[in-house]
Image (cartoon, rainbow, N blue to C red; front, top):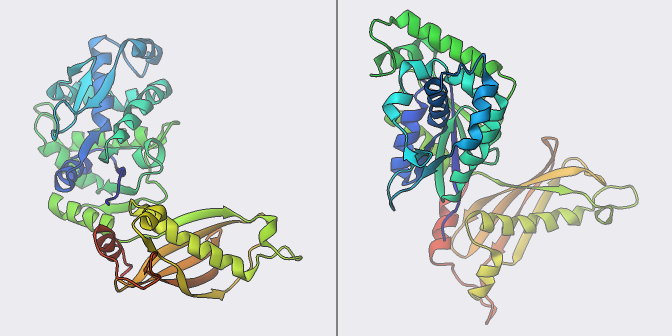
Length: 361
């Protein structure tokens, strides 16, 4: 059993190193890399070919969208995705030329272009492991991505990186001019009305000044492998409360036990699969510390993490929060039992390793 449909969102400004990072990450994780910036560059390139100024004539460009197709496609098994425009591989040298780079932000700020692009970007999530980079991946394109990162660097460092990239600037361009171009693009991207460039609230920001690409990738992999709690949101029903409208103490243990199922589901299994394998995982101990009450109609969040595991007994730490305020914290301890005999048994196989790998530090 393995985790499925992992989506890694990498956002950041121009020349921050996010493309290099995403490509290396895809290679290390054996995933598929999607560069949404190249999708926008492709449309900007077509605007140039059709003599359209996307800043002054956006509707001329919008009218052409229905005649175009744009998709990332895996042409051969175990090969990288290829960006196709109207069924033909995109000329990457052309779309990375300076004339295209100079109008890509103006193209990307057209609302109809972004709306047209959204489904094409999300279509890539049919693959089991996607590393997608751009400027609004964690905030708009994949808001429920399992992992989100915002890769950035100081403006000076980004200008040096862009200046050193062959084909990105015209001969004779100075470092100062490159810095000005990047600053202008930052301004457009950060201030556009639709999907402005910004970190997602739950993204991890990495400032890459002084870091090699390998170090950035290693940092991201360490974060991806760091165990994280599962979360369940629960609207308190009237049946869970007493005459004062306060949640019964015992109901928290019901939520704690439910979190056991969600943790197993998060590993790519289900509690039913466990039962089908002839195993049960009942609660043998439950404790909770009560801090504040929850009441009828409150929207509460239950978080849970694997805390201890010896192959036989499994302890799960739980918290209940409302608007990030801690209401209750505690744990449940479970034991693996053979359903046929009722005897305790040690868990073996892939699920055991997944649990061990996801114990909190």
